[in-house]
Length: 392
Image (tube, rainbow, N blue to C red; front, side, top):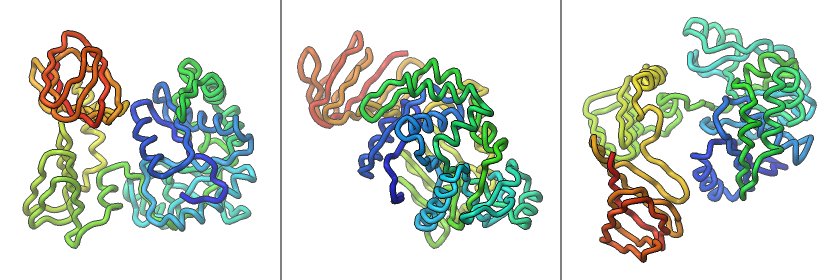
């Protein structure tokens, strides 16, 4: 987003996502700092850590806090609204974007606007939780806004409010940054200090308690992409209303989102479905039931299924790891290593499919087979693919 005076992109994430963030930032050619959370403690500690970092550079620094998984349909309208919110933030307000509803959605929280303030923003009369359908219709009729969960504030203002309402979050965030470890663009927060923060969302920690809250009315199209139906809604659809990504073939099908990261999806004579295929799982549900997917995940977690807690494909240190087959006694994975990537191969059977690996014992070229009794460190001399079989 091109905003006058924007100085740096700061992303708060876990270690597992850091490499993906850095790759995307390279494509955008932006100045970047990736703040690494030692553990997830909800949004307030994460945002507080970002504020503490910005304050360490510029006490009056203004932060445009955006969730990573939101979709904004009209960037120019968003830019204008953001500039308006920035001016209100400089006057000491914590500004949230209130999106004009296009329907009585039950998947979003709402904001009741209050009195007008200088610059086109308004006070917040109330934040309200996700409503049932009848209540959502009343909110829309009464002029409520969708709560986008995106904010603008100065680092100093947010930290002052946290010091008042949540001193543990305030102190832990500042301490985790001050004692953190810098590694290139990464700032690793101090684990002990960060662990002292309270697990709480920013809405509960600050926004529902502060008298500095303001709402900037926004006319841009917005979705938090919190469910697959929202992704269907935000995507470009064909003349039949379908969205197809990956190896997908649809016949006599309408208003379907079909998305595959591996296996072929074939759908015939269906409509209003969500079909999502990953390497180790497939989801099929009616679009109206998209919000219930969380209940399915919770049930899988309660049943102790590991697939509910991890993604099939893993990325890190220039290596993509993808499961191929699993039996009670063995796991087969396909590893793709970038040129120059260094990693530790586990004990097991290794076959080089393409490229070459260099180890202490020599170079393993295409077709090489290695039966490793213990882990071995290797470096990819160029882009390399290998199959690894490990025994359970």
